[in-house]
Length: 569
Image 1 (cartoon, rainbow, N blue to C red):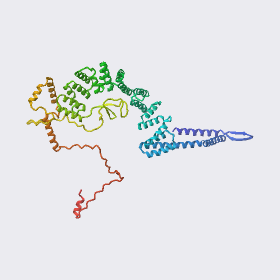
Image 2 (image 1 turned 180 degrees about the horizontal axis):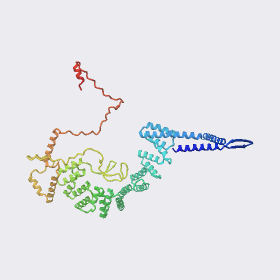
Image 3 (image 1 turned 90 degrees about the vertical axis):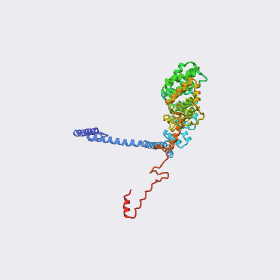
Image 4 (image 1 turned 90 degrees about the horizontal axis):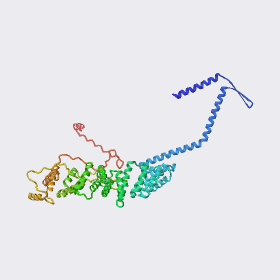
């Protein structure tokens, strides 16, 4: 709308000027070289306008002729750039889709059009990697590393290729060279740190960690954690040579990461041996509240080397009370109670975890039963320990270690080990275990069943049992009564009712297995599902299998039967 108004304003001004000059005629005389030209003002203005327009047109034509080579060259350059861009983009798409033949085709076209462009070099390296030509890939990455604009990218490619051929020295060199760049890439800083850790150069690893922190590659929390891990590794290696330095390093690591179990356990053990038991207890208690662990319980129990087993039990019970109720706390208390011959305390600590016990719980229960003289139940618990779930262990990258390590031996990653179930997060089927909540079979009231054979038969007569019980001390009698009360409160399907109950339960199980099932069992999906062609799948031969249509039944010969056959389903 504004343009229309401007147009009308200009037309109106031109019309007003033309009318104004037409109403005011005048004569113009031009004398030049003895000649006189008389004309009007309007004619003179028209002539001047015509000359100006002709001059502009001539200058435009001349300028276009002079610029034609540059215009043609720019057009060809733009066209060539578009073709090169299309070749590079299509080549990268082919590399991403895994089409090596198309990638080679577009790479050759891109190299012909733009051989020195960074994207062309990247496409050439990617195509060589896809085709399996490692030498060509290394040569291309080396050419990129020799240029300033693609230096870091070329070093990264050389680093990857060195890792693939297991040339760790060359990989370290490429990572160190890339780490010297102004903008240190994350992969270079992390790789240099991991290589130093793998070589056991903890001082160099700490220096590299400081540089990563200053370059902004890691945040402050990660820095504190990784520094604590490296200092703990230093302290472990210095225990034999310089004990004072090991204590100082372990204390610093425990301060940086209070939940780091190896640092707290090492600091507590070394400080306890030095006589600073209160400081050692504070470090272990703080780590225990964050992460209960058997190493912490063992270090806490041995803060006073000359203490008796009952004193160690009291100390471990105090430590367990400071943290959340956990299986590790129960196991620590049970272990200390077994060492102190406090069988009732050990059984009470393990009772909440005997329904679905892990291996350590079952092993401690077996040791407890053996210590109390029940060899049959001890063997039963040992058998259950074989089929029980695994206990937490130091695990990193599916590698299980019996002690903590600062780096993973599989990937070289720093602070990779975690205290967890090695099978956590994976479905390995149902663990073979009995149901603790299953009701005990009723004991026959009329006639007792004959005793089942046992490798170590118990006394049969009541007189021998009474004589044996009379010879026991009063303390053992009290423990026996308490144990009987606990078993009565928590019935076990393996022990309820004695040997007769076990025999009755075995007979009932046999009868139940022979009896017909009252309900259908739920079908379990197979682990591997076979592939089945869909109805419209052409199949391996490329032909669609079509089911033949059923042939219509031939109608009977007689009339009524033929008519009735038409209405049959």
